[in-house]
Length: 500
Image (cartoon, rainbow, N blue to C red):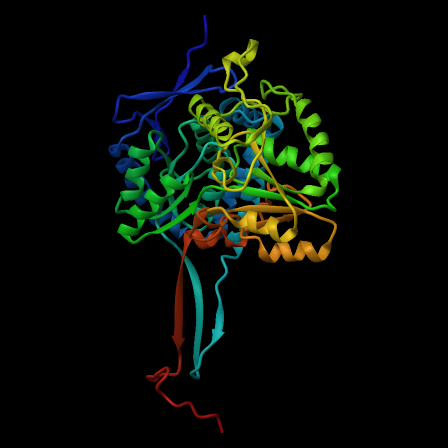
């Protein structure tokens, strides 16, 4: 007999409990469409219960000294470290990225939780002199309260870990909604934190539709801050709803990231970088290299090398360590990518390779798309809109100035890259590229957790995640004045005489 598919509830108050609704959905392996588990389509009532549990747990959790909160977050990192192989395989089965990247997703979670646990002994404020005698001025950080964390499917453990780890160290309690394509990874994180000793009610998870569960979290009057990673259209809705309630909203949204290849680029290095940047995670990264802006002098030579290498990429079940590119995450995502490929053809872009769904044999059971490369013109939709799949637009340019102008002329500003041996030109690129991240002689992916992550323009608002700025998202600054003069002193009014 076939094993029965596991059925989950919602995670509220430290327990898996039944949803108040009856509707469920299945999470499936995108390589073969096998059902992995069943989850509830949560309701507004479920969110109400989760917020109530978080609110009840908040005073006690806030009262834990920050170093003690951080110890639990560090324990979660150690639990994940012990389970890395198991969790990495789960990421690959549920999301579809190749197994090396599945492990990498978990390793990024581990690295960030270890890093952010150090903030438990910092949570730094400022101490400054007063303009008045016998008076001390300083700032301190305090938690916001109940926060909502809404995360995407492409990094199903790493991005939740960025948000949850920072929020916990800062003393907040959480209502978490994972992406509906990867709820099993979210459930695994609940198990990790439970084993780490996180008190009941501090972290709660409700699965379901964004329009129901996500909206209920964003609109709930007791949720004091929203952290959202996802698409621009949904991000704008979240931002508007949060603004109406006057709460902080942090958005990490899309990207249309360029790799600039100048005439003096190291072609072997560029080849490795663009392969990984464009087709790693089947192009389903907000930092994916979706544009190669290449100098016309090296176009022919490089493209011969590049197309030959792409033709050798191994596409298949991502659990196989020999596979280079796995499926996209779902049928809907596959149809979105194929639609953009059709748009590119209709716009007159020259298809250099790929461009089709793979359907023969084992490929017919999953959502596989050939790595696709177009020779495009700047301004075409495929060259300016985010596709989120294994599709690369190649754009020829004649100069550094033209390359930067093309790179900047999109509505996004997340990641950017330039390959050049000219150090002066590299520094000019750092200054002029409109992006939150710039790489020199490396692809647009590969951020490290101890550095701030985020972008400008339609890529997002509200600050940066990860790095030293991670705690800004989840803390309020309190300014404190301590006057020990024993009399009323009036700043900006009282004349202070120098001591005799």
